[in-house]
Length: 305
Image (cartoon, rainbow, N blue to C red; front, side):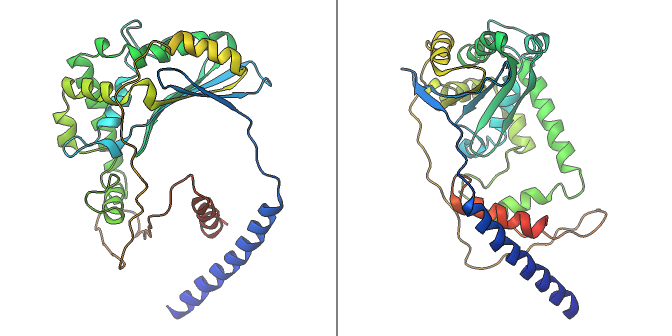
């Protein structure tokens, strides 16, 4: 045991020395500058444009400022459930959302939900950009008429099966204990994004409509266009397809809350797994901070080499 501790200390010491050298080298490197322009429509939709004509494609990414942090007690998992509902067609395009994109050769079509955001994205050939913007604007402004009880029940089942698959993997239950342990009761990050089975069962059509009307307005959204497009063209196209969408209600913006632990907390979970596993987890500053970038660098060096 003593030898093991010495060995670990030696490895860590070497890694920290490497960290200093790497950080010094990075400090001498030129700053990364991704040029972009941005503008805001009268309805509050913020648009970011990065012009790059190397290939005749445009990456379309739309970010809604809503995630599992916005779910009240009894509604866990709802942001992720709603993400699934967004792919089942809209009022002016019934049917699967992916079909028109597959026909024009689009790539990277998907969506994700996390604590702070829900995003949807695809990369399309330049001539298909109008179609992509129309599709995104239609489900942003004209979705609820396309969602019925059968659609809700179907996607509820898909999400619950996704939860079962994650929970039943080796070490699958550790994610919940880690999140509960780091973020205290009452913290917006205390519960998991996938939610609980009971809360998913309780989700109703009224919940769906309320969630959409509260969080999916233009003023709560950022649209990013990157690739074979310029800001002038982007402004014209975005105004055409998104200009008449409602801003949505004003929403509070939560401040960062990094919980501080007065003492270490240890927890042991017994399960049928191939081998024992040790997790060490801390709450750290958010991803937009310099501290987070430096911690990522240190973790990469210490954990990967």
